Image 1: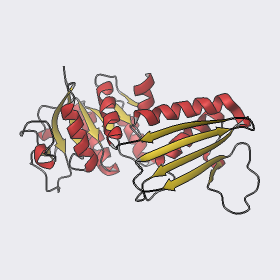
Image 2 (image 1 turned 90 degrees about the vertical axis):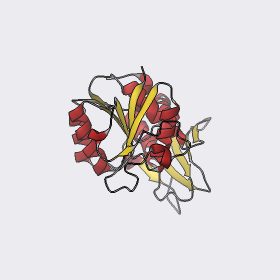
Image 3 (image 1 turned 90 degrees about the horizontal axis):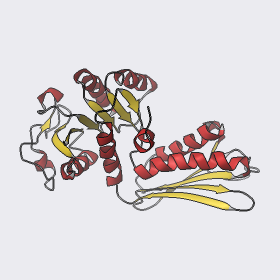
Image 4 (image 1 turned 60 degrees about the horizontal axis):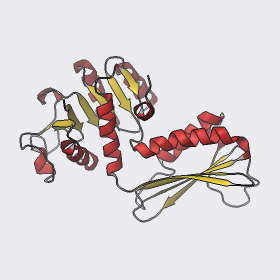
Length: 270
């Protein structure tokens, strides 16, 4: 039986791609989209927003979860922190599983998510790329196995319009390595310029490239005096994030209440 899925933030760039990919998936039934109440798209058919969408004209954009029929099994949410928190509370009250791709949650908001996930299954991840989440695991395993005889440097590249540096994914890789090796973010060194002195054994170099239209490149360099290992992931299309979120939604349906992450999706857990 197909999983009934609802997309929150459906009028945005990521939301439209999620709608398209969900509609094309034979294991999913797209039941509608959600947007903020002031959106000019409320009430429109999702096909009006995305002409390539393979769904009926009756699949519409709503501002209220209660207006969606049939009720979804899973909601996929890429919106803003305040909207995500409101949706998490409502989904928990209605017994609907929730996949959250919103970043920038505060510590207090994260605690609220944990509370809501006691009622329904939820996934919250900073990156839904399957490959990136595999890199998190592999980089931690490699760093732990090699030990302090190998220096570690993380180099990330993105398009020339990205405003933050390093990327959240680069920090995710660094955090995974730190957790596996007993380091902290205090061991991160962001770029090097001038007379910075000799490299310490446990520091992790963090470097950023901003170039053209790069979707997202991340390479972790491990090097000793005798050999080097490079672990690289390159995102070729932003659909990688939408596809990963929908895979997470399919995995989440029917799971017991808990707050999961993409490591659980890939390797099982909880």
